[in-house]
Image (cartoon, rainbow, N blue to C red):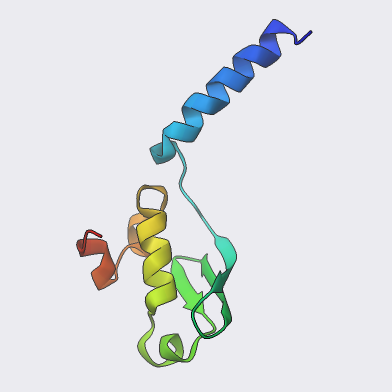
Length: 89
């Protein structure tokens, strides 16, 4: 039988999982499977990075913009500077 304190924590965790605005990423690193390859996409020190060729030329790409859209309310304001921040999909 579960202890009542653990049951309370499970219920709180379920509520928190729905309240994503409680979370702000300081940094993250993901493998992003694009259509042509898999790229290392990350956010650290207030800046996005991606190993795709487009990012190296433009400082943003479809991978970083997709991550902005996925994590919109969990990112600090400096992470939301691409044109994608203004577009609703």
